[in-house]
Amino acid sequence: MTTLTSAITRNESSLQVLTVLGKISQKNSLLDASKKLNIQDDVFSKWGGFSMETFQKTISPGCIKEMLAENSAEEANHVNIRLKKIVRSNLSHTIIKYTFFDRSAFGPGLVASTDFGICYLGFEAVSSDPTSSKIFLDMTERFKEAACFENEETKQHLQVIDYLKFEQAQQHLDMNVHVLGSEFQIEVWKSLLLIPKGSLSTYGKISSTIGKPRAFRAVGSAIGRNPVSYFIPCHRVINSSGEIGNYMWGSNVKKAMIGFDKLFN
DNA sequence: ACCAACGCCGTAA
DNA sequence: TTACGGCGTTGGT
Image 1 (cartoon, rainbow, N blue to C red):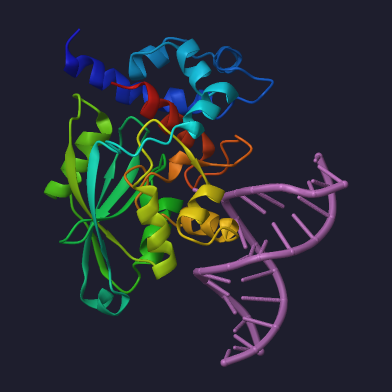
Image 2: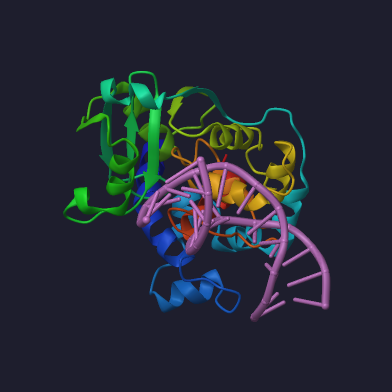
């Protein structure tokens, strides 16, 4: 099987993987869920080249604890991100281009950018009218003073979508990210970039690293407003209890990202 | 400017 | 499992 073939099946099987992950609980294992949904249990190997059992184990409490304990600061991420703030007062002169993508390792989604870099990324399966989707409304609400229009040809978008398909082993990606947010939010988002791929942190730990150990709840709110999911890895922050916790695009997507981070490549 | 309500929380019981 | 504290953000006066 060629790399290309497996990449196609990966991105096509992601929807089924996400469906199964949305159905699991402490009572319901991946195997139970896949049987109930009448989904083949080999979708996980098609998706990431690892078995359902391996994935199940990776998101089990024991492995989650291990990922929380890892505190290596070397070689943090495969993606080297340069973060720049969007100045709100300049927004009326800002042009934002957006592209819907129908396939990736984490399902369909929306990516947007300014001329400097990516300003928005999220994952949602949109229906026939994309402009009424939660993801589109969230993006346009954030940038309502800017000029937003659809564009399929942006080099930055293609680069991001390519990466999210994981069609080949990614060594390194240099990426510019342009974020709109308060000082506090941007400080929180920057600290997320320090969480190594394959390990996890907690809301409490993040609040301590920014010097406000009691602001964990505010940190949760700030993380929830992360405009560029996956690349600003808010999926790597979970509850101190070991629960996966909530996620803007669904906790099934969060689980998929956590397991994929750990197992893929 | 002020206040109330709300969150991807943590922890104590 | 439930209740409450603490903190930045937002939306309504």
